Image (cartoon, rainbow, N blue to C red):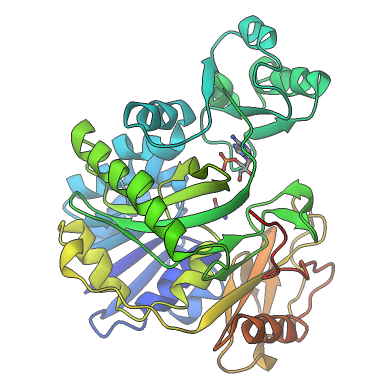
Length: 421
Ligand code: AMP
Ligand code: GLY
């Protein structure tokens, strides 16, 4: 088969790395890819949001399956376009992609199907929104309705911060049209966890759990990032909690999709808050998490191609998905200054020195002559597998220390339990 992965970050490297192990793939492409992905796939210089370019490439090269990594092309309708051109595609269509692209769409879905989530109200008028400051107390959770590259959520500690956030989102429109509507939510207390699921029209199959570390500094301090590291399986997931998530969230979600005619085929990533009253949905994303994919896919035993093809044919129930017992820890190395502004083009050294069984997923890298240099905020995801969680942690950090580039920063507490339920 000929397969095309769309995207060029750590998540797409993890997807391509796993797909490259499939004996059924004759040719693997990635658009646009990065220096790490180039080791397992042929990278083609087409941006992930250049839908016309990707559709034309897929047709010309007779691609049998396209796999879409990031949320923006999904929301733009890349799946609809590829399918109309006869290319099987793993990733939800534009209608289903609203589950990530509109907070208000998702809140209405959750409410309609009685799925536990935070109380909410939505606003399209800035004066009405300002009158509502503090309605659920503080911190006040304010969310721009649309896609905002992970920056559209503000937890305002007091009325002044809330007013400033409203002025930015709805007044100055710093997120553009994404801020035309703002969702205000009650603040949930508890431990966050991510649950990724393979979904088709007949099944919702959870992957092994993972835990993300979103803030830039140790101890969950500093601004939010795309994610500074993950481990899998999560240490907060008990069998009882898994059962609750299945009964109260996963099954009602699948039933809701069926009732609402949402023909979702792809990965549903459920952001959860494990509260004293049980698990509640914080958000839905419609793609693998990044860097959740790195530690979860590192543990997958089954051929990922079989899973993707089954999902596109509504045959997920026929597949027995197997996972390794080994535990995984992925530590992200980021550019100095990230998530604020940062410099690019720093030469990365030590990549050849890492242990053979450690996987260094590339996120923001590119080739420059004989060197591999930084080209993004998150640069690498150093991922180790071992029989125990502690060994995986130790191995990941020992290997991070072998790699360097000017300004590199990483969290030293990835894999530690920072909060109790
Ligand atoms: P989201 O983009 O919806 O995942 O929100 C980003 C982050 O904001 C989440 O990962 C949580 O840490 C936090 N957050 C969002 N909604 C809530 C809420 N209702 N209560 C508490 N924290 C929240
Ligand atoms: N790591 C969080 C995300 O991918 O949205």
